[in-house]
Image 1 (cartoon, one colour):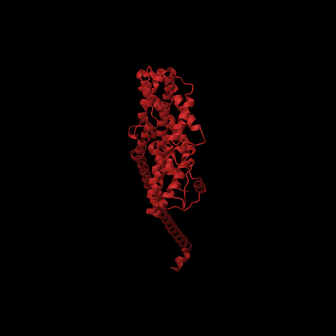
Image 2 (cartoon, one colour):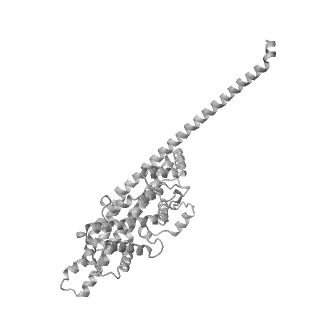
Image 3 (cartoon, rainbow, N blue to C red):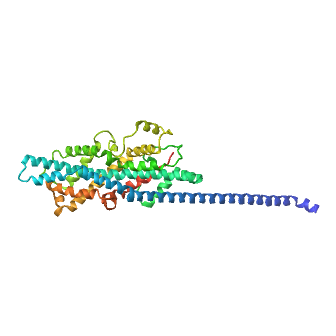
Length: 400
């Protein structure tokens, strides 16, 4: 054996070294393979958790839109419809015209017809603007509240779920892609350009039930408080645009469309920037706005006030202003097209005197302020891709 060892020592050492090295490499490879498999399983579990959360959020988002369409918006629209009928009444003017046949002087008749012209257009444009703005405002409200409730509930139920939720929101493009791709929508602006939203980092308490109800009921502000001022300013815009329009002037589809858009533009551009927000919301507390815009949180500031400040910040954002313009134009175009269809023998398409068109305007008012389930204009706005994307991004905005 000693001779064999002396004779083949080098070969034996090389062979043992190779075997040892091979075994060591095998162990290292096996350990690396196990770690890689564990990492892949962990990543798969994380992806599954993320997908579950995205599915839950998508379902919650869709439920919120259903709540708007089936509960919140119908109530607001009923109140708005009643208010418009009561506040702008043209029946008295029409009755005086009917009773005054052969009695009223020519100047008196012209004065009444001019009143009817201004009131009819005011009523129509006011209805168009109010229905559009109230529907958008309520969607902003409910999406903000729904997002807050979802995040607060996730935090309250499970810290780990909250961690996953935060991690998911940090990777916002994934969630955007999930919702946008499902709806087959085109994204008109980058996810980083979402509308400005104010959040309070330290607040982990859920929204109080009273604050929630108070926040939602604030949508009645337009009907209960702002309607007289809105009517007055809208009537001023109508009077300015129709100032040179005579009752015998021929009105075509294009002229009517341009006139309505002109009235809306004059109204929206009058006064201070975003003055129209004050018709939708109660006046803002300046001190509260300064406090929350600095990112600080005052314990005396209620959830309701925080939600209202956040809502106002959304309404004055550039993105929402763009949505308002798109929605108002879409509503106007569809309304004029509907009036052209309903006009006798296509009179509006070829042109008809303004005096003959006024009764037709009155017939369109019930169509404009119809309940959401039967309102084709509201459905048209709701289904616009730009509107759907905007509210998807609003709902997906996460506290920083």
